Length: 334
Image (cartoon, rainbow, N blue to C red; front, side, top):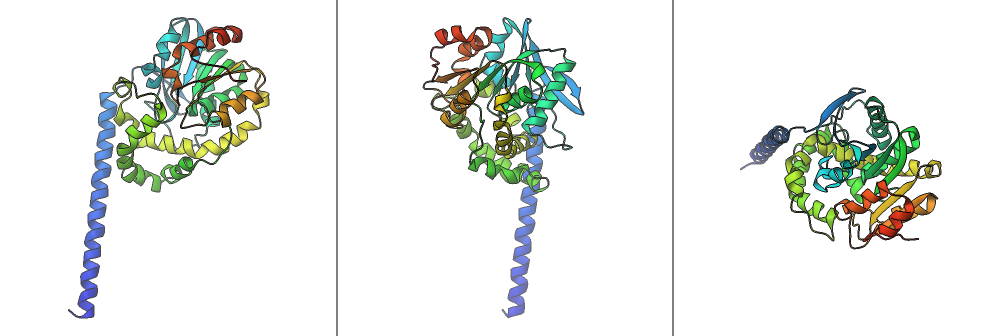
């Protein structure tokens, strides 16, 4: 075979390889989209919708009494509060409203703005006004805690008490957040979320959830309530990636303003949290906010609202003094 023939052969093989790769990617993308549509049909919205500033926002409302608003973290949706039992416990004595944050569950996430925690807080404050909620107890978990803090800082007229669970409050190096940046980008991120990221997320999901719950086991009902395929849809992968990208700069901006918080604040953190270090975030926030109460839960991780839901309800219902007496197994650290 002469040199020209060898070059032609190599070129043809490269073309076949590229073509096969593109066909494989297209087939994967089609399968991913079909799985997403199937997941949405199999897990229809159980709450109500409200249109706010061009966003179709999904929420669940239960109970009567003084209002409590719940804001979930990343990867999950408002069903996290269903699976943990926190929503039903609170609904015994309160009007409870749990939102799907934009891009999660059944809420839309249009591309016409950057969905920072501050932007999400603005959207939720407008939703609360439309729903006739005046001052409320506001509870946020993980990324939802960042949104809750932003809402309390920018729209304090809505917040009578703040309850924060497993939050990230100060800027720090997060390799996981940096690795998510390409997935958040337009075009490149769209392709990744329908191909390689979709596949990798499926293989890593159970391990990631196990890390969230550690040292506890994943509750038996978790994936019954929280659909795997709903969590793995491209729109929710985009929401996760964008939230991770905005996490560090948002914490840097908010940390300068914690002194502006005037409402009572209860901070809960798992002693063995493998996602957010309790000393660097929850303990530090307690030191920076004078009117806060801190509860570090022994032998508990990032998803502590599953293990100490009763104590969280007490933090909402009771005075700080009675919480301190009843917060077992939660303990307060000075």
